[in-house]
Length: 385
Figure 1 (spheres, helix red, strand yellow):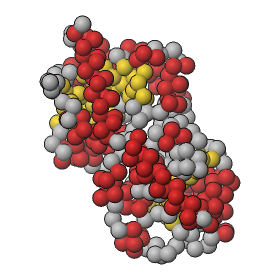
Figure 2 (cartoon, rainbow, N blue to C red):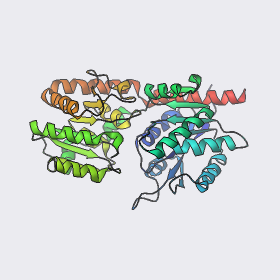
Figure 3 (cartoon, rainbow, N blue to C red):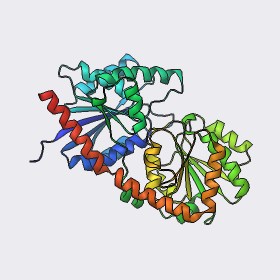
């Protein structure tokens, strides 16, 4: 017998359609097959010169979803807390699902303050502590997560961290990020056409890094490695796609390293699958990660990956099988591994193909949707009992 449909309000605070936003949209159809209707509430502070409507909402509405936003003035304040509470309490949703520090704190409190306490699921994509403000948010978040009906993590590393912090293991559930291999392949343009648009030589080795320009992503290490690779492979070209607070610093570093003719900063790009398809290798020298969607996208497109052994990365990148792993903060090892793959295209192709098979089997939307739908229905049954 088919279950009656239930409505899940997903809340996230962000300024772009990053990996978690994209992953959620990938789940919409698969969740609908399990009688789960997805709704979205974005806490959004428009960047200077940016769109008034969150890009995530544009994509969600194109999919026919009910998607709204609340203006986020910045740091926590009572006005924002009240606006979120009104939206959550008046949503009529069956389950609240929050996806970051701010939405966990504001949404979770709103769910618990309601006259009819709303079942609450919180996903921990990544806990970082790179600033005093983030350390404070992390501490508050870890305290409040104990009130959630379930806490979803995207990697074994995050699960271990939460259990070590005292969360009940019966309430911590692992649901890896998802990728639709066929859809990613369909979205990628012809690699030669992409290279032509970017002014890249059709036969040059292209190595890409895609991510937010922040300390977490280890882009300074990538630039050092790029200089080494360029010394041995002067024809190699390097792409850095993404925006963030360190852009000017990183551009100055690239200039100082003499990479001005070999490396390009592309800024935020909506055509990530095409950039990946046009790349020979993909680097991910992060210092902290959950399970980055761009990694899954690269693997889905059979791109050989060299990534740091952090967070959930080793869950999918099996060293020497589906990619190559390096220690974080190791630009010399990154350069060594990149050069090794450029020197051995047969190994690179073998790793890329194994990567595509792995994520197609273990990171499909259908697999994650089954787990989430079961989780939502279980929570509702517990409440009814």
